Image 1 (tube, rainbow, N blue to C red):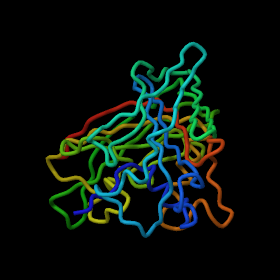
Image 2 (cartoon, rainbow, N blue to C red; image 1 turned 90 degrees about the horizontal axis):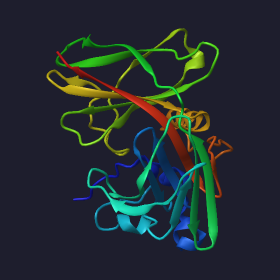
Image 3 (tube, rainbow, N blue to C red; image 1 turned 180 degrees about the vertical axis):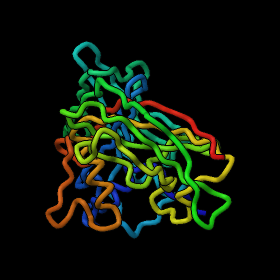
Length: 278
């Protein structure tokens, strides 16, 4: 049975490709999905584009993984060549990771991906601020006695500044966090508080069976990440264009910070809270 892809980077690949890229790796652009989060190791997923009609599973997913690049991350005081690793919580489970370097609030991180003589670069900053969660609560669903929805209220960090927020959830049955449906928001469209319904996102982009609500009895961990500005706008536009348009076609461009490739290099500072669905 074919497993579906968990990593969002492969959705980006799917959206960005056409069959002309699939004849040889030499002509295929590299798609970058990199994360540097405060107090976490750096992670970078590198893939080649694939066709939206391709079935990706255990038998062939390695055809789309770039496992031969040199990936380097530097700051003003640190430099590390990332190591190619495996994490069975993800599918595909392969990515590049730091062993020592972790994200630090306020620090700027330079990414360099070298592959077959070409170099891709990107720069992002881990925000110096965290979100402040005002409240987290459940709400009844009409006609449904088994599930409830979850809402979160976040205090706006600074009325005179623009910040981006990305929301994730994880239940006790899940191994990792998943972005909620429409996960990224810019606070300039809100007043002093940002109110979001935490509709559970699918565990992979081809999954249409996952309910957006949470079962009574679930323990739900909520993660709210403040994002660097360009990645924040990238994910906000990406959310809005999912299912409606190909964000890499028809003149619609995601505001990427990656130079020489596709994708995004995201700096974030996160906070977590738990709620039991009662």
